[in-house]
Image (tube, rainbow, N blue to C red; front, side, top):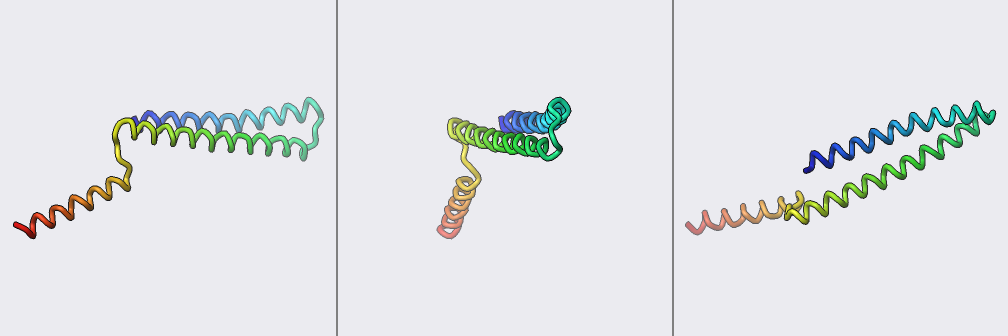
Length: 100
């Protein structure tokens, strides 16, 4: 399941990277069509870039929350919980070894 989520995230990020290229092409076309200055075109591109970055962060946050929710529904533990459980088992094993 993690692999599926990872592939989905990578596809989303790839789409966003493709969107960046398309945004640059769009700005170039707008510059030619409306005779915009290089500075104005750069402003538009920066605004588009900022929007894409915000959407990418939003997508990553949603995916992270979905993954966390899926892990909870499946009864999986996170690394910290696993580390704590492992330490607890080791302590119990030590107690058993010293009592025997």
